[in-house]
Structure formats: C-alpha cells, structure tokens
Image (cartoon, one colour):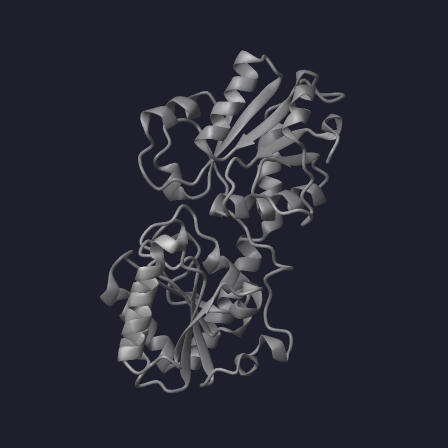
Length: 349
C-alpha cells in the first residue's frame, strides 16, 4: 500500500465488477504516474500490480492533513457514489479536498446526479456528446489508448494463420455478449454476408453472463442453422484480447448504447479498420471513408451495408487500417489524456 502522505490525487473505484470506468482507471493511472503525478487508487475490483499504487480505506484518516506544500488533495470521482463520498469527506468531515468528476453519460442526468455535479470543483466530459448533457462548466478530454499495449502485428502469433481458423481474413466483435452490445446485429450480418466471401471468418470474443446465456445460445443456434459454425466462432473470454485485435482485418463495434467505448481505439491502434455504430463516442473516433465507417446505433441494414465493402475489398480494408493507426497515434495516445487530466488537477491549486 502507498503511504497517504505521498499521495496528492485519489482515484476511487467503488465497483467490484469490471466495467468501462474500471478499465479507464487501470489504463490511465499508470500513465499519470509515469508523468510524475502522486496518485493512488482506492476500492475493490482493481487488479494487483499493473502499475496501480493503492491506498486502503483506513488510510483516509490521513486526509485531514494536506500533503506537504499543498493546501488540499484531489478526489477524482467517476460515479455518483464516488462523488457522494467525496462530498461527505469534504463537507461533513471537513477534509481538505478538491473534487473532480468525469462524466461519460450519453443521456440527461437525474436530479440527484445534477445535484452532485454542481458541487464539483471541476468537471471533465469524455466526449462532445457527453458534454452536451452537462449544465456546468466542463472540459472535454477524450480517452486515449496505450500505444505500447495495443500495437500493430509484429510476428506470426499476430496473424490470421496463428488462429487455426479457416480463411485468409478475420473480422471480429469483442465485448460482453448481450443485446446492448449489439452482438445479435453482428451475428445476423455475418450470417448474411459471409457466404459469398469464403476468405473471411468471424470471431466473437467475450463472455455471456448467466442472465444473457439464453441470448448467446440463441445466436449460436442461428449460426448452426445457417451452416456457419466453423466460420462464425464464439471464442469466449480469451486470455489476451490484444493479440486478437492484431489478427483482425476488420473490427465491428455494433453497440446500441455506450458510455464512451474504447474498443474502436484499441482496434485502430492495432492497425485494424473499424465499422462502428454511433453509440457513445464512437463517431468522434472514426474518420468515415478513411479509417472506417459509422452507422446509426441499432440500424441493422446500415451496419450490414457498411461492412460489405470491406469484405469485398481487402486492399481498401488494409488502407483504412493504416490510416486508423496514424489517426490514433496523432490524436488518441493515452499520454495525451494523462497530460490533459493532470492539467485539470493543476488548475485547482
């Protein structure tokens, strides 16, 4: 555990199960540490190691005394319960804290959430769309991707051949298997599109929780009925999804709704073209006709029609993959996000 006396910023994570917010913390905090920020995480559901300095709840008693040379610490919340706890520490226990909130919500906030947000010292929006629902001053800081972890293919293990699957080109859809993620839209498109393109195989990486098992079983039954079980393959939860991004020629993100959504950036950083819905911030990541395509969320026909040209023209797919890699390196490096967030902290001195 990190000594609270050496911590200037606390990033709480008050959720045990893995979520997009948790993944953001796991990626961003080590990048902030590399820039010299004295930050620590707090809460369950965070992996050991991974460059994550941690403090315990017991260490919070040390918050009554500000770090040497400072008048306060930063409490950076990303959920309502984390904002509420920060307000309790500052308002009730009178601990010297400045409160920061990052909003990724793509909807109108509840009255309670608006109440909490109005009491923050600084607010960050992860996209222009999430910013449009805020009623307070904010700064847009888009998420970045770790370009060391997500990178183009480097060897045989990063190729389609290494999978042992049939065909020459791989198309994939990653994430939890559920209606919200649009897994059914992807499967439906693959059943319709793959037969005329024998060089392509589709993979779906991710798990179906118990409440979504029947949904996943129904999709597998549809694939079997179409005689495509060898070409549309459910991989389950793979040990390392990063290598699967590198094996793909095309990644599809068909979500019906998202908070932000990092998977298109992870794919593009792996030099993979992307077709995505306009859920979350996907549309702000992709240059249509250059790095991929964007379709209305939940619109099956638009998604299918956007995928088809990539299957028909692998050379175009490769060009868009290369352009996507260049775009991510210019605009969506994780280090840029870390620098921008750190600058918000500094503005609160």
